[in-house]
Image (cartoon, helix red, strand yellow):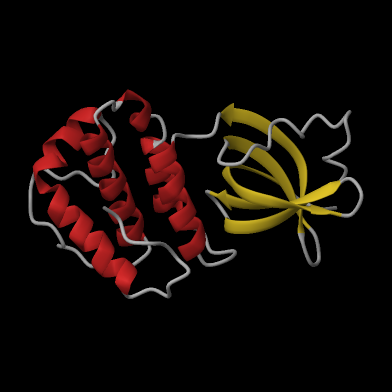
Length: 193
């Protein structure tokens, strides 16, 4: 008998597989980056098809087979996040090793997911993106502390006040992110602004 694993997940992408199935690229809290087979998910009567939207945050139940993970159910959570958050999630998805848990990164992304909605100023949004990207890079080991020495900078940001406090240091945050990205292969991401 196989063990069922229920875990929060973020959908990073998917591709069609066979006539009615799809393979999802999921970032899960407990298992890290996984490629998960969803049998028959493209069929009109499948209950999971609308829960699995790109960049959506949800709870999934998975079974580990001999060679692959299989999706048994998905329960919709938060809808896909705003643009800056999606860019940072995409960065995390490109840097995460497969089948290696990174709960700090997952928690940082989930904590900051709804924050961008309340930020209307473009300059503050750029600060938020740099803060969140730096938190992801820090947790994955691409940046060493202390990159930025200030009591005003909270990584990852969890409130708009955290973003406003870090805003005067935006140039330093962006420089730290770009320095880390410069060390990575080109396909990971273009520099931040």
